[in-house]
Amino acid sequence: MSYPIFIGRKEDGFVILDKDEAHHAFVKRIKPDYLIKVNDLNGHIYLAKVLEVSKKHLKAKILEELPAEKADLKINLYLCCPNQLSKIDELLPFITELGVYKFTPVLCKNSAVKEKDVLKKIDKWKKITLNSIKQCKRLYPVIIEKPIKIKDLPSDADFNALFYEREREDNLKNYCHLKIENINSVIGNEGGFTEDEVKFLKEKGYKSLSLSKNILRMETAVISSICQINFCFSC
Image 1 (tube, rainbow, N blue to C red):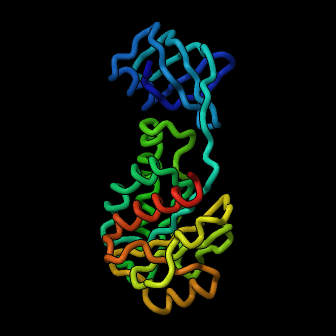
Image 2: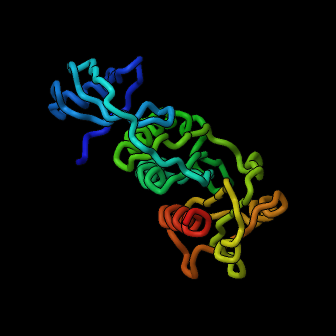
Image 3: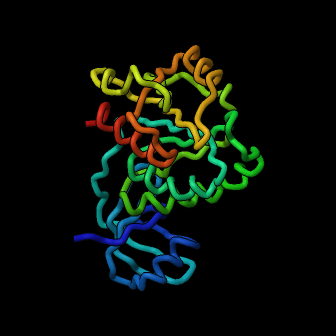
């Protein structure tokens, strides 16, 4: 049977929902004796029986800890900021479902937005990813980092991928035989990368890879890249 899932905290043999989560349960007409699932964001999901509920507080008795799968692959997504930051709002639920571990907005040559504008969005993005994990039943929300400049992109993963729209000779399937635990994936915005940026990232150890014979929209490129990464290294 499927039970509604919420974000809460464990206290002794109980789980507690506060503020927004308690209000969400109240709006969904959760009542005493109902069974719910609660994710404590510490790697545990519990099945619990509701004891008391109001608009600001819910308390439930833990019946059992449910099995939960932990991701074997950490995908670190570095996305050059689009000119409309609302596009990231729309992408976050999808990258949450597809298993991205960490998301970092990047300021590149073709980014028209300013760092201060990106910083204003961080709290909203964290809330979006937190809400999204309940639907896809993953243990943790996507980690949202502050924006960085392209010169500060790390190359510290087992595999560093630069998905570049002009690449025609190499693609990810040539590396599916590798055993990796984490990957850095860099995607350009609607303006793409400059030649200097591509050269710089290659010198840092990034592999320039093609996603398709066609030129993809930024949103399509993000989803396609994550799916290809999961197919190669998680299946």
